[in-house]
Image (cartoon, rainbow, N blue to C red):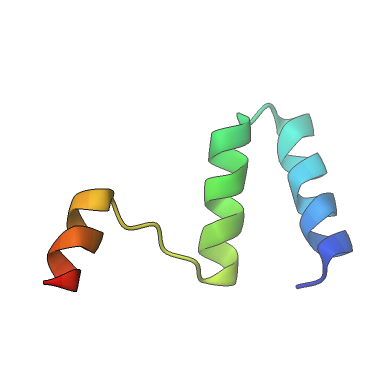
Length: 46
């Protein structure tokens, strides 16, 4: 997904009334990025 495509997606989400958080979360899901809470990250280092 190009930067332009990501921007169009975020613009479309904004027009739909999505919050910035929800739009970015949806974009991350589409491109396969998973957010791991800090506790999970620290436990995986051990």
